[in-house]
Length: 395
Image (cartoon, rainbow, N blue to C red; front, side, top):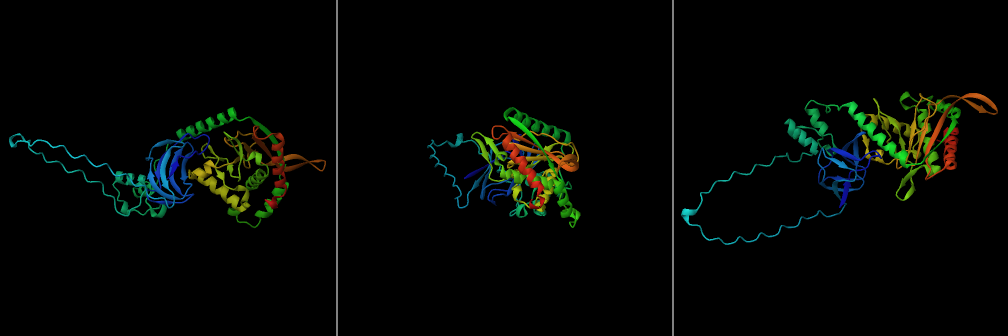
């Protein structure tokens, strides 16, 4: 019997609050299915299961705050038999008592019948949160059309039926304060424990800009590529070549990652920051990567990220976009071993063929863990990144 536990959704997470179950005992699940929603300092995160099987028991209650690693459910593997509860021991025979004389017998008091159990409509699939809310509001579940897995009624369906499309928004200021507190704790830990070193490199974007203009000439506005997609793809490809920047540092030392899951730093409206991962970023085409970046940004700002996106990043990239300062240096997100930042692209004075010219360029800064790499390896990574952007047609 596998145990499904509260996942770690980042170095700044210590616990999460269970706000909704999307499965019930007896439901079959497969790897990647979203089975619960957990609230953290960075918003509500959809939690995925990482094994196939059947939900046996839900161990956590709605509203319960659980530390990372705490059991939430038990899942039977395919073919695993349903556990049989042991039979209760036989009751001991009652001891014989002497007969009571008629005049000594107490009058018999009739017992009240036990309360009837609540009636749940047969065949109605609904999450525990939906059932509780429906009971609170007096809404019959059989009158609702479910929008959850296999038509199950979820909390949003009940709220919509009650005329409230969404629960009352929490205090935004308090939410951002908690997020900032979590970020501060993680970054303070990073600077205490990780010996950072920094190197910078300015890259000529003339070739990338010319290619981008040509590639976008016949594309509709909603399908056009941004320079950010080229930067992200070049970072991912360079990380695949220089593995010392892509992986984790743990109790056993450095473990290089077998894939490039690139964390993308996303600024939230009103403040705050998250860095969910684009899985296998080095293998995506530029149009697919652009679509993934748009989708991830939209869902991050809507609070609809998945647990895999919050926990699987092997390297993080943070860019200032088209406006901002020329360069910035970041702090590594543990247990990762490097972080790449890019200033805003703009006109720079560059030397080309012995002459000083004005050209569009961007400055990259690599923050890396000195326990794993050094300036020579870091330079190899930035040099490879530069080379990728000089051949944008190969990205």
